[in-house]
Image 1: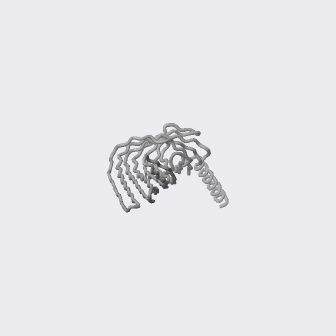
Image 2: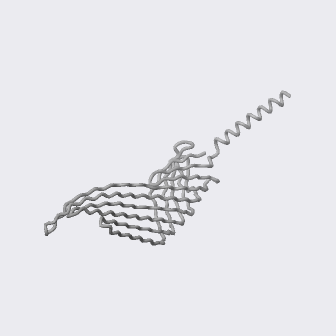
Image 3: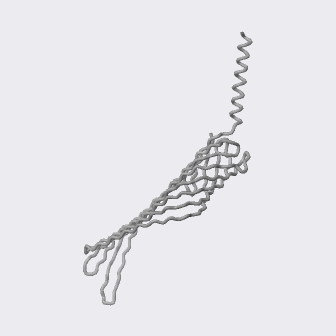
Length: 233
């Protein structure tokens, strides 16, 4: 009985040691990548063989810019009249884009220091941009006259295509890596543009104009280089 008990302890100890050694020697299969240079996004990558992996990429970028302008001046004419004028203008520009892409990646060369890889997959993206301008102009001749001018320009674009990538990553430690990628894309784009202009005068005159049109096109592009950090688990 004692011999059996000792044998079971030795077997359990051997099994635990073997399992720990196997876990320390096996490669991590999952990886989360976050990049932040020239674009913002996240990637989940699953490695299912020594050189092959699949991944899903989500890219989100955008910005918002607001500016205010003030100006004043004096205009003189040959008949002796003079007009004092001043104006204020507020401008807002905003845009954002969302891209999703499932991809296949293949490691061309890898060692314990770095990994050089390529990949490709379909991509779907949406881009929105907007420009709004609000201007008030006041002039003085014999009476005060105020002109208000509003302009809105919106653009919406859907893109569907194929995206290829070139990447390199270097090991920081067992779990952390730094990586850089560049993307090459060929896309079919559907763009809808909307413009609206309004003008209101002190004398109650009113001007309103709208225009809407669509542009379909093919586009080939090469992105700026991205840089990010990845974590393997």
